[in-house]
Image (tube, rainbow, N blue to C red; front, side, top):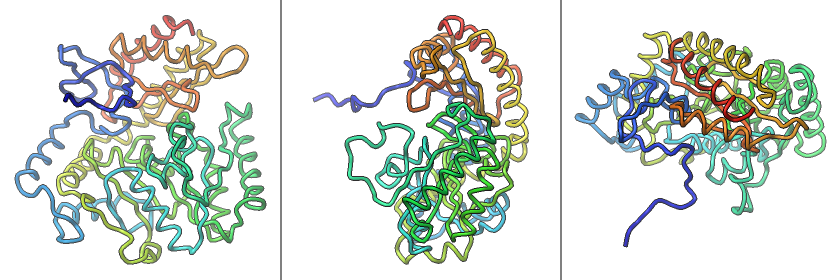
Length: 418
């Protein structure tokens, strides 16, 4: 018998990678690719940053696994102390697991136990994961939800302030979405039954759409008025990706719970939720745990990741390079009417493709994506229709590399007939 991978696993590119270094991946024939996927936002310090590699190698030789509800280990304790320096004010208690989905599930469990309420409100286009609870919170595409029902009950979906799709200005979209949220609270999920709002500061799989600060301020206002928890899903936006350490920092709004994963440990599996002590202690005994959560090697890699981010000024770099990238994408789109909207925040940048009649144009997006990959630039698509091409370079990307990617992308747009 010959075993193979599941046939439903589909690669976004045809590359079989042999090694990675910085912003580049190399295939088995030695061809170099500029990686603007970063493992879907995971390799925040680039591929195999020497300090991350050294920290992980040193830890592997000392302790690989110290199960943290059985024994405690120093890398986990040090990481917790360090995260306290960068987390939003007041979020001083942490619980670690392995993946973003697990952390979302932990946040949902905590919110329900802490408030004694069942319902959660998410926003159209949300992506929170593939496990049953996380999938129940996910509306970025039916592929996450289809064929597995019934899903976890108690989830209501409110409109997201997606200005381009709504044909509104950002502030008009924000005001509209807040009015619709108020209607939902009056008609579907009573505030007295609502435990939490879950929101990504930048819509991820749903299309790379930044949340207007006024909308987050409106969520905070409603959360405070009704005793609802505001949960910031920073799995993709956290750790400097948006040009601030946390995506929600752009709004000045303080969340009640932060979820982090992806770039936390530069590629090693690690995720966490953070909440104030008074909130975290309301979790029921035995509701938090896991075999691999807070793995010693992952924690060592996360500590090194924090060192690199701070020593190399990667949050500021993400802001500067993000502005350069978005400006270049907008310029490239000027000559291509089907590249209809360019948007993003920091090093989360996207181009949405639309046909002349205003319908999503997934075919042109796919052609542009393929042309870029063929020319050596690795990218990903997103959005419920697959008509958005996104760029997520590592936080170490420099101006020359951004310009190289933009040159390839401009040619890809021309080849795609955009």
